[in-house]
Length: 114
Length: 115
Image 1 (cartoon, each protein chain N blue to C red):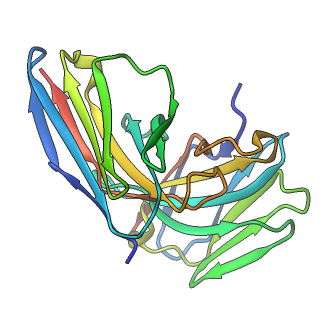
Image 2: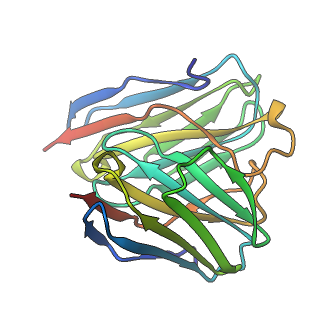
């Protein structure tokens, strides 16, 4: 089973709202990732958790706050977003978090900030 | 500077034609992955190549990793409308050492196969 699940599928939020994106995997992977993807562009790495510890933060604005409650779950808390934050947010997982590990992506959450 | 140059950016062909997508770099990669992504969905891993000169086949898709591990290609034979999507190459830089999780992505190739 190489499935990564993400909820919700679509999210529309105002600039003053607080919302969370959720990601789950049951492949026994110990690394999980958040990416942001604009239309027809490659994914841009935001955060990496390895063994439940934040190992990479790609200088992401503080209005995005990641959380890894356990090795199977990954959340992205959103607050005071801007319209330019509208994008497809992808979660991925891999075995341990080394760059050579194969990464498996979820279906994404389509976020629209109004 | 784009570390992984992917070409072409756009490809529009008729069903039954063959095509090749290229990923090139001046840097050496420990491994390289190819993904296909359909609109509104996440990228799906097609293949991983790790050995210089390696060739892998997946039905009508043939993947090759350059001998020096600086480039890769994806060849599709007799393309079908179901092959339509965004194709992404992504590599792990050898110089990255144990740098956690950072894949270097190409800019993507948007393939449209017309019936």
